[in-house]
Image (cartoon, rainbow, N blue to C red; front, side, top):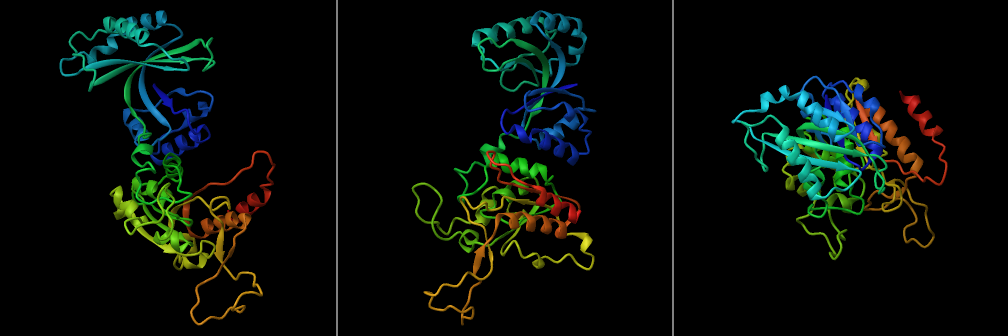
Length: 392
């Protein structure tokens, strides 16, 4: 058995990400039935440490995982269980291995004196007399995890105490590694790195898969998919965004430079070999993609998107604008002409996206996109549900 400690952020994506990562590695995710947004610590069963290491190599919302040694409601009971099961520590009691003891508290802050007292008691109790102590790079990190009820209240009570051996950490570090402050090229709507990596897990981006972003922008979603090994391609209707020209989105900076581009972002993270192309194109025109003789074959393993909602970025597609009498050339014919862009209704954006997924995704491919929700209003999503079922 293992103890999984989840991040307390983005609770609504916890179960979905965990199941997707388990599905990616063909790991039974039956334990996900017990997951909930209310609790952050769970006990799960896996066949071996290998399964857990694979999950930790992808999961963003898992902070850490531990091999469960004992669990109790009080320290008195925990110490007793450790004494009874002292034989299981024999494999760690070697001069070739080192150990350290840590304490984590969820739901209540604990002083350094309190933590040191618990660590001293455990240190004198564990049968590891041959094993040297290494506080910086220990072979085995034994950890006490305190779980409190009524988190944040002064009267919060200790509900469970877990004692385990650290297996590893999740991929929460990626949000710092790919932070937007240090990224070469960003825009007004560049996705938060942590959310983009969660989305990459939802579509199961991996080595050998091909991922499309029809509303590519500065490539924020594609960067996360490429990090996990996927070959990525994007389309963008806005020439200035696609070619990185014009005003900069950074505070205190007026204009973009020739050093800023979507390609530069991929080169910055040394994943440019997975960036196939950025095409200036209209996402509503699906005929640009050719699936060969058999349309059921599909092209892409996944589609990932953050469509324009009309708040920071307006929805646009190729089309004729409504003519105005004051225009010099009211007609549609010009000697040198660039495609005009017209308004792209929000409802059409998502129905077109579903139709694109039906036409270009391989069987079993995944579509993941962001959808704006106004909690104060009731949205009738029956139309979108109908359109989706129609194409299934």
